[in-house]
Length: 308
Length: 303
Image (cartoon, rainbow over all chains, first blue to last red; front, side, top):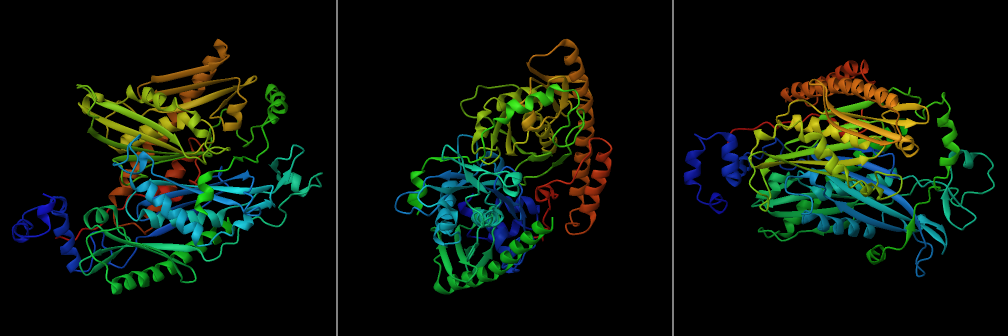
């Protein structure tokens, strides 16, 4: 049935008058979408170049040192950063480290079951760590505590709570938001040579020990990367696809730009449509627009947090 | 750079080790001490529950009790695993997992392997398994943040999610726990209170039918204490049941007005919920407001 619904058209076209919308949508998904695309609209009433409503909440989890919940349409991602102390390697004694993991727990989608993890999860994890580490958003030197002795290891774990397309975009948004929410706790070195966090009273009162990291409580993030996923289908470009759209039309292009407009990554994993240079340029232009939107959303979330 | 993270150097949590335990204990022995969050001994934490948090699932719910935040998704009824024997009645398949950042020290949540089977046992008596023969209903829970009384919150949240998925049940299952700290019984304990407790008591029940589905008692208890704890828990369970009913009604009414996505109706709904619940358990606005927006059904132009 899947193979037959794309071409032909005559038979299905006749059926469309008699069938219920939902049945038609399930039986002939591609025809259903083509009819929408002719009108330059999508089944969820979006124009082709519009992303879904996006929202951000910082500090969602109190047990994490930095956390954020990002929502693009129904796709929901929760990112949390836990800081631990490590001994830096000898070739970079004054640099910390970031370890990134992406999880798709079974709650997020009917296709993921315990013991049968989603195939896309490791792909997205790799993309995320490539983008975050190569964009230079976090200066690893800022994660240093005592040169050659101790540095922060930032464990960034991103959980997909609801999977409805554009997973990478939502995951990256939650990850950068978690970094902008991250607080570095004041620490001192105890008698055993271990690094220990100090309580508020210890920092304010004149405790015997001085905090090792006096001045730095937040990371300075330079050139934050944001991404946009587009679907290419015939001459159309559909921005920010839902899970349904991703399953029907297979050619995806993900563009990652940073806030200064530089291209960080471009990812087109196979697919049936050959992406022409002009199409790719269109995708980059759309992403540039989206970066502005996302930057505004992140700034608003940061302001909201300071007000609270 | 990626190579560095792959080699995974030894790391440790810088938070000071919990040697406070020894100093704290005497406070609990006293009759009058104050709980860290200024609650009375018999007062539950501010709670928020809402169904319909995950769109991809057949049913779902989000619960927030103080710092404990749990999300439960229901899938199915769907085909049982191939290896399963034929069964006249349906099956429940429960799985509970924790995020790595849910606990103070990273990755400690995986200590609770028994939660999945406890959840299964607490719910199976309430679900009408005959209503979905040969198939399985999957109940998946993820603890976003563990702040104490995790299992009772998971159980209550899961039964709300089952109701949201339209799975037939005799009644909602609500669950509450009590910790025994010295001479006092404290209801709905936080993680700190749980780590210092002498004994714990947890009950899961169907409040309208007045039936208990699960009862766990650990530690040292006198008969009178057990009676006291039981009464406390059953009372809280029936109150919680009312809250869960309200949130189901609210999710139905707010889902039915599909076009009021940005209008004030959602907000008014939330406030109404709060007013209703403030009388019962003291309910606050949720932390993760984003998870609790009602499901929006798209408009469909005719093909």
